[in-house]
Length: 470
Image (cartoon, rainbow, N blue to C red; front, side, top):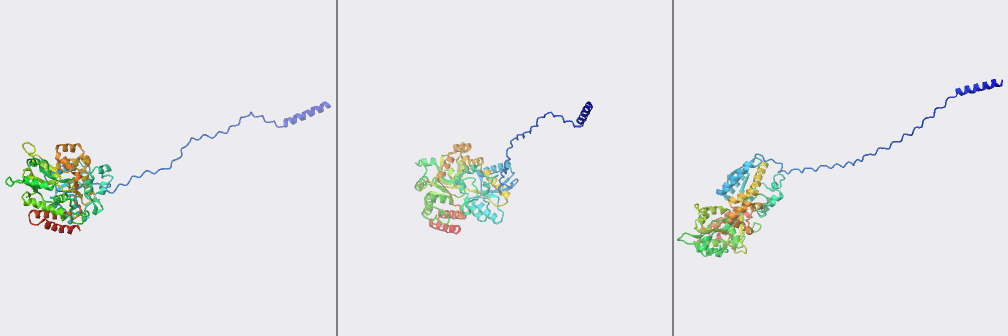
């Protein structure tokens, strides 16, 4: 019985065990997945703040122009050797300039003639594109507001002159083309310069017992008297009357033509009176005479009719040609140049020379005119022009070039003239100066002809001068 109860109890326990849910299997331990470290970031440079590009400077108004194909008319005063070289250079510019600019040269007559022609053209509203004129003439034209200032062309980024190029011009030459009465603007440009000198026959002086030219007016008178021989038909001095001659003679005596501001006449003072008295004395005593035609003094000097003449250094090639013996190619006599006799401590030489002005036409023609001027005064061209004409070059580098050094060596008189530059003095550049020049020429002629006394002639000239300068 007890066994039966035990078996029954065991059956119940087994049944209960079978009914209990099985325990889940123990999982195999899995190592925890490590949290990945954040990737190391590649350093990125900071984005720079954008810098705006440097703007290209806007071109000036001249640089924006295009002178291509322009045809410009150029009135000049050149004749003989000068004209030949001028036309040669113009032809070269016409064939080689990159813009296809054509310069048409026209002879406008000598200075008084071209002045009248230009004034008439201005009145008619049809001036040339550019023209040769003295500074006082340019001042007259500028009063009519028809002259184009060149300052902006010189400063042009595209077509102008660099600082180095501008510094290469002789400062004194450029200074003469600035006009104080017109805000000191550059109303013209210098193609060349020359000066007044005394020409003398060295061999003749030696025969007369002199070993050097006169340095004072007393010595000049003495030598003129020694050279004069009525039977032989020789004289001391052939006079080519002119305002520049008169001005230089007055300066050589310590006088002035006008006041510093150009508003007062001073040539009626003692140096002016004494100048014409001296000229009258030479003529009255038969020691000097007035030439009958232009360049007659050069001819008479070459023929040994006169001992002295006064004239421009631009005349050197003409004197040389006239004195040269065609058969031998050598000079027939030794000759030279010197500053004018003087009573001042140092010599005084009248430095002068025409400039070229550009008239107001069209912007393109004005630019074309400037480009021709720039080319003409470049070192190579100014040297060639100087060598051919006897003018001085306007650029320092040209004067120091091999071509000019060779020219100096072959033409010692030209080099000698160049050495006179420290003694240079210039005439007034005021409007109305040409009328004053005309009055002084007439005064000189009237005294030589015996029509007026020096005092009368200069008083009349002063009245004419005062009417235009005040």
